[in-house]
Amino acid sequence: MTDDEPSLNIPSLLTLAVVSYFVLRWFLNRDDNPAGGGRGRGRGNVVDPASVAQIAQMFPQMNTRDIMWDLQRNGGSVPATTERILTGRGLETPPPSFQPQVAIPPTNIPPAQTASSASATKPDGQDLISRYNLSAKAASPPAEVHSEVPSRIPWSQNKEERQRLLQKRRDDMILAARRKMMQKDQGNAQ
Image (cartoon, rainbow, N blue to C red; front, side, top):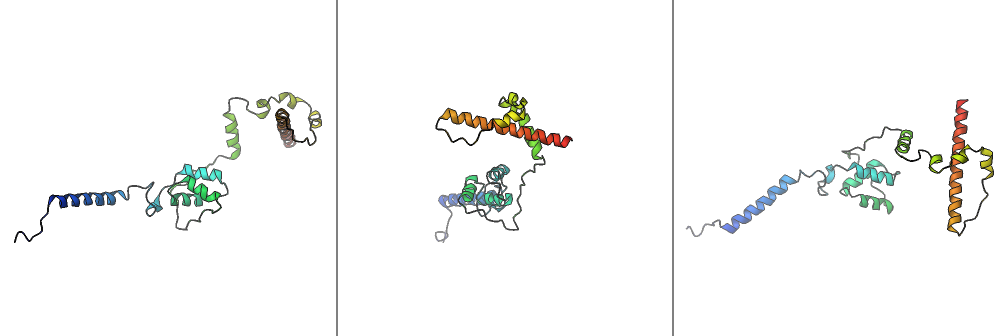
């Protein structure tokens, strides 16, 4: 009778051990991967705020919540989201149940302070007048500067001539903006 009963041999025990190992590993690791799991379990993934900010800077017309939803759906792939926007397919509207786990940190700094802090960090010329050496022209009377404004000059084939014309236009624009700012300051002072 002992010959009719099934027995456990070494290959069957090894197979059972390997299968058990992989099953336990799958059960224990499926909840430990919050940042990059599979598509089915990826609904609770945290989206990288740097990726959201990068796409929001490239496409300011897009809603941040839509960007987060798309990044969460495609596993955080910035190129895939960018490609979807550029091809004109647009981004899907997230369902009402979608609650982003990471909000982009709000910037409470007004834009005026941001611009002044950015210009303050530059070690060389802090304003355009000193950067482009326009202090002599800025000190001259405004009437002379207005008389220098040329009429429409056609585009030259000579590279140096084009460079000179573009620099002159840049200088004229900077000086005109400075005059407007000074007039506005004088108007506010009175």
